[in-house]
Amino acid sequence: MHVIEVEGLSKTFRVKRKEKGMKGSIQAIFKPRTEEIRAVKEVSFTVDEGEMLAFIGPNGAGKSTTIKMLTGILYPDGGNVKVLGIDPTKKRKQLACQIGTVFGQKEQLWTHLTPYDNFRFFGAIYDIPDGEIDRRIKELSEAFELSGFINTPVRNLSLGQRIRCEIAASLIHRPKVLFLDEPTIGLDPVVKENIRSLIRQMNREFHTTIFLTSHDIGDIEKLCRRVIIVNSGQIVLDDSMEHLKFSDASLENIIMKIYQEKGEEARVL
Amino acid sequence: MRKYAVIYRSVLMENLQYAANIALGFVSYFIFIFVFINLWGYMYAEPGTRIGGYTKEQMIWYAMITEMIWFGARSGTVAGQASSDIRGGNIAYLMNKPYHYTLYILTRYTGEWSIRLPMYMVLAVAVGITMVGQLPGFGLPALFASAVSILLGITINGVFKLCISLMSFWIEDSTPFQWLYDKLILILGTVFPIEIFPKALQPLIRLTPIYTVCYGPAKLVVDFHGDQYLEILMAQLLYLAVGCGLMFFVYGKGVKKLYVNGG
Image (spheres, each protein chain N blue to C red):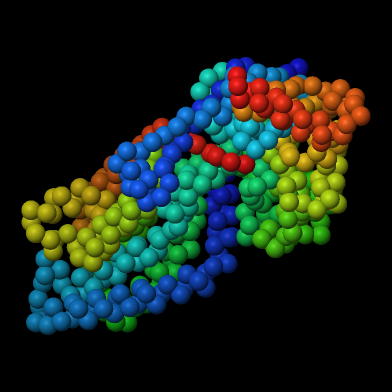
């Protein structure tokens, strides 16, 4: 069963352009110039239930824009999206109850509250009954080993502890699909490994579909069974990890080569 | 509603840690009021004088109530935070939850003033009673009517400030518009009652948010009349309905133009 269906998805941004120097700044007031950037160009793919998919590409390839359209944050200019059978642009709030998101570079936790209060807060906004919230907090606290700092204000936690809490908070409502946008960014190797094993555990126990973007080869190699590579807004490769690894070269070299070769092709197209 | 109640409770928990910081603002409030007491003391040097129909006590209490609303409703959430959420793209992560972003911001704002306003209210009453004296004719009906009116006025203020912040979907920076709105309220709304202004200007001022945010609630405290209460209440409800309609409309249009770059 497909939990994500994307067909011909496109997004264009209009970005301001300014000539250099003071002259350019003055010109920009009277004669503002803009340029169209096609961030995503007719992308199509599907993701099955329980799948762990790496959606990767170089910076500016259109990964995060795609995630934001899949979660209803951005409105596509063209194409169709269905996540769990819901159109994110039309029923964003309904979809929000069934998906979880972790953006590694953004905080969703309230920093002055403790993780426990944050979990209670997120549980309540997802309309989970109080007794059930407590049961889930206990379960997540054990799975993510949060008991040592669950009552410490988030602002006093280390980055690794905070990311563990961010992921736990995004799971409080048991989402069917979890979007992870660079969840291990800035973490040390030991914490990265902990986070990966938690993601694996979550997928195994709750059959959660994982949609992961990361620049970390370890995340991709150790977690995902399928890889989609995007470059210049287009899909340049959609293959199984097994197939990609069927080579003498390291996964990192293979991906680098695809970024460079296919990136040029995508730009020409 | 439960989710908004939880947001409200969380903001209270967060802001209670800053009660001491809020109390530091008392100094500015006290300076303002001290200046007004002396200014009006000079203007009302002749016993029995009325200016614009107000006695000296009424005039000082008017300024104390409007300043209390002004200081009590000060919020970085409806102005700065909402605007920077939109410009910086952080709104993307707040929208992605099962609540309405604008109601989320307004609930946070309500949580903030729920702590600030009672603190300023205690200060205003203490300063007023010790330095000016009790207001003649202020009883339970005036207390009830003005409490409702103050809460509505503060909510209207939040809705309009949020509408200004939502302009950030189209313009680079909404701060100058916030500044204009704040100055309009501060200069034309908090310092003098509408009756002090030239007769030709008064109907115009009554059409601005000043009437529903500052003037109306303070007028009910200093000079309560049932018929005037109904007039102010109707104006506030109308303003709130129009403001909320505008807020949902602007947000609905703006969110489709959202541009979130990077990351």
